[in-house]
Image 1 (cartoon, rainbow, N blue to C red):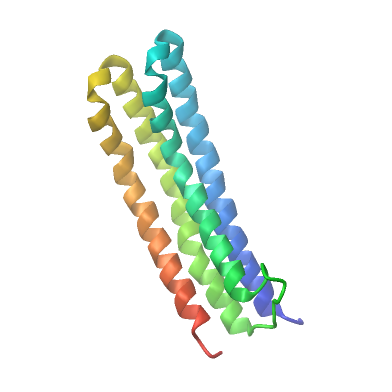
Image 2 (cartoon, rainbow, N blue to C red):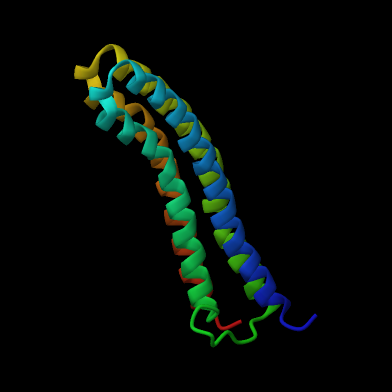
Length: 161
């Protein structure tokens, strides 16, 4: 049971990176399939559909950022990881979960919005600006989860426990 707090903190960082990364992998893959179909018909639409394909990938980046910040705050990345209390470790875990869970779910739903937007661009390329708005609305919730996790990690770091 030595340093269970550190184990939970590392688990939280892993959840943030793994869950958000899995959602992004699925999302980018689904949108990529739709984008490839459009480019097969009209290679000139590549840049527009590529942007729409990449949008579900941001959650994976946010999850990785939260993981790095959490690991940095615990001292793991610098090699100076010290023992932290079980309570503090559980708090790091809880702080990382919003980004992991919301990142996973929002990336999958953002992919569906991106696929629909890719279809819109396929038929009406002049509507690209409007097509960007639909998946961008889903992005809002990933950003909110990122903010909650960032603020939570900052709060845990400052606690004397």
